[in-house]
Length: 95
Image (cartoon, rainbow, N blue to C red; front, side):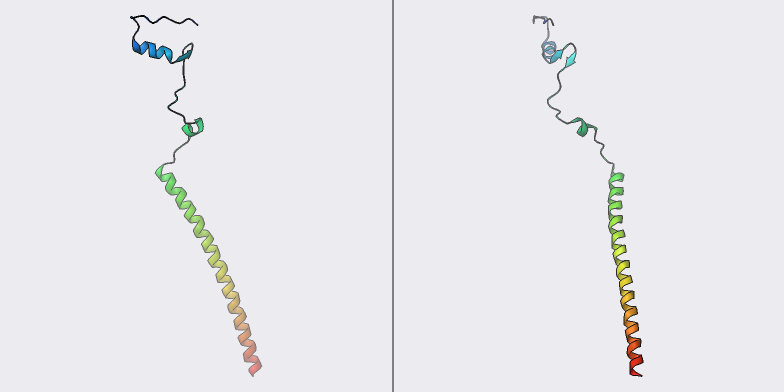
């Protein structure tokens, strides 16, 4: 590749542009922007999407809580049935 000699007719901007070149018409990569391609292409969620994700997280927590409460309710009913049966047995034995 031929290099041109700097002459008084060349401007400072042209000289800086020429120095930044590597090969025929290929500029050097900028060192100031060191983001990876993945980071550069990452999609930033909208406020609505963030709110939706938060809602879904809370919804999952509440569904688990409801399941626990329903299980506890079923266990209490079983305990209540056992207590009723024991009370009937005691009443029958007292007669």
